[in-house]
Image (cartoon, rainbow, N blue to C red; front, side, top):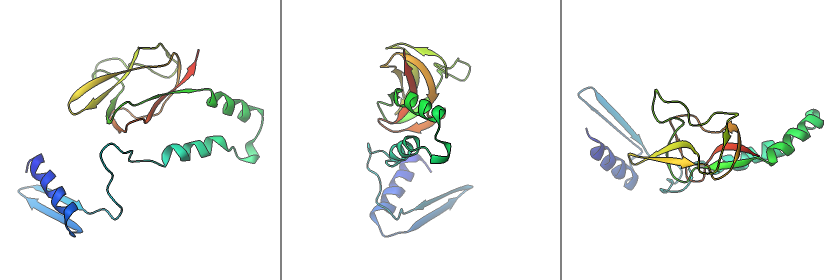
Length: 158
């Protein structure tokens, strides 16, 4: 079974009232299930609540742990800049398996420096930093899918 046939099956299930479709053929098995909630449209973020949820947790420290260090860390985190994904695709931290990482935590980056690659439709796009500073945190796992405008790195400005 090729990818075109699988796409046709997915379309068939989405357009029908079929709840689940399973096909088994010569050592190959595929199961397609209908979602209960409406399907996401191409280009829309799959996880829309995550950034709001992260802001809620970072902006409201628990009263038990509220001290000078927490306030300092919180204000420091508010000053951080974000490098975001300009497209949907697969995130790569290095150009190849035997190549070094583009950037790591603690590295200084300049405007225009390549920080990662995002593969979209078999095209590998170098993503350049739009900010200068020090990488504080990498927010995405290597070789994982990313959405448009998804935060990739936190950068402390210089």
